[in-house]
Amino acid sequence: MTTILNLEARTVPLTRLDNGVYRVTGARIPLERVIESHRAGATPQEIVDSFDTLRLADVYSLIGYYLDHQKEVEQYLREQEEEGEKVRHLMETAQPARPGFKEELLRRKMLLEDDTVFATAETLDRIMAEDDTDDPTLEGYQSITREA
Image 1 (cartoon, rainbow, N blue to C red):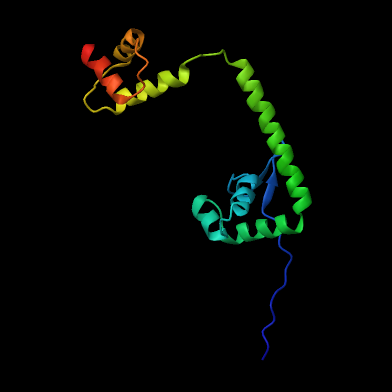
Image 2: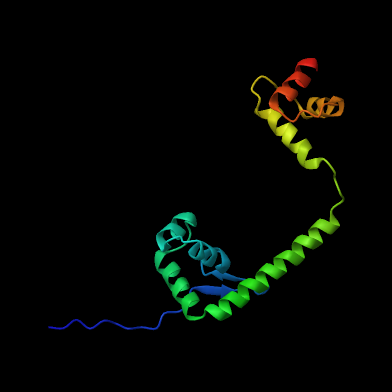
């Protein structure tokens, strides 16, 4: 007796949104995340482990689609990257410049992570305003808090 396999055509599990972005159907994961993971050397199982809403069969289908339509998918990925750069540029130009903002956040983080300092936001602001040191180390922040 010979078993006959049902050789059905499989639909690629992708849904195209109104903005042109392709997402894995039922998972909200963009196609580019799956392809980036695959190109980075992740196995289909590792991709599913990274995105728990994906099904293993869908990941295999997506990789197969990518391999069969590599030129088109690569073009889509380039277009998505360009669109992302445009949006990033618009966001950066719309935001006012805040010199020292990153450093301020890092200082606050260090103060909050220091278990000897229990400070309110107002105390942190006062400490930051009084900080005239250029010492970005935890020791520098501890000396500031001891003085405060």
